[in-house]
Image (cartoon, rainbow, N blue to C red; front, top):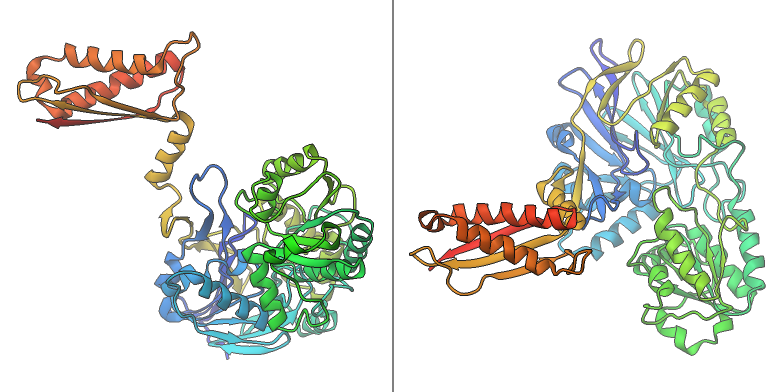
Length: 556
């Protein structure tokens, strides 16, 4: 039952205005005393503008604030942009995690692989199952996607039902696992849907996404026609694709070898969950040397150009166990995520220069997206007939296009929310009514730092212009004791005219010191500041860039 003061709200902390780092909150109850449900807790991957950082997680300061009223974390599926931050952040909010078996097992495997990871209470809910968490009745509705057991969440409250789509597509041949449960979605539509919070990833594309079944048939033909060694790189989490490659390899008389810890982890979990029972065993890298080249298919991680992943090292001839020759084949069974084009292109070019045939989605249907195109989204709207549409899981262009699309599908209200918006869903007309704290934290080694952290700013500067480090000793009389020690990193050794950069630094250092009054030479701070400014200016005049200059003065 709903009280007169109860409200239903939606508060995204990640995934709206970006692709990745998904985290959403639903609140129900009176202001100041709401109960909250969290949906997903994922990561985004850092770009070159964050040197030394690999992953980004949502700032959960607001979740920490409402921790006592948080009834649970519900997972839509096991992709890293939906579960990747749970191990690191769960101690901050402390609640139990509710997930299907595959997501639960992958989360447990991920936790065991990380040093010092906390114990996390995980409750398994079957696809099609329901769980009651405080005022929320949550149904896990089967949806096809590029990972097993993806679910939409039908979140029932006394003020209405919200369908949180998660990642999905409509696919009659999903490769493995259940297809999108159209019958159940239609029934939910008949029940009445207050709001649809829906995936926007492919809203710019017309038609419907190709089926995994189509991709499997093309991969089978390509592998059957290959002459030498075949390497397939794909997302490690795409078990249907891995299964398709393994079955194609078996049909061509080849054995499958796995390269990459993430790939091995996912395959182990998939076997444990029964998804590879009809698929031949896959072997580790140690088996590669004993197998004829024309009798192997290697499945490797790194389809997005990650520099330390297997496919990148293979392309550079730097992998300790895998080598390719002219006439071998590499299949990129993946789509390059925007922003990764340069890294993927570098790997592709490495292979082509070596005479290796490269097959991508540009010259064959070797990949299909796990997200819906406009035709599929239109079907979902027709089944559900939501009163309110909240576009999610997309950058600003995707969300804007989805908002216009939702209006055309007949949604009475469209709320163009972004991370940090507090969206009122019921009672009354929906809309953005406030803000909640949100942001992002960067995982730098084993610690988390804010996006604007000084250490990262300095690191960017060092990457652009290098560093000069000077150490010198000064006596009590204000004279130099010995020869200053000068070190440079990331600074060119010679200038355009061939002059040595060391000479520029030395000239600035010694002339500045000599021109200081003897009394000021006895003040280490004055000496350090003067030499730092002089060297930076001298190098900038000679080079055109201003490096970071650090001066250590020791009084002896």
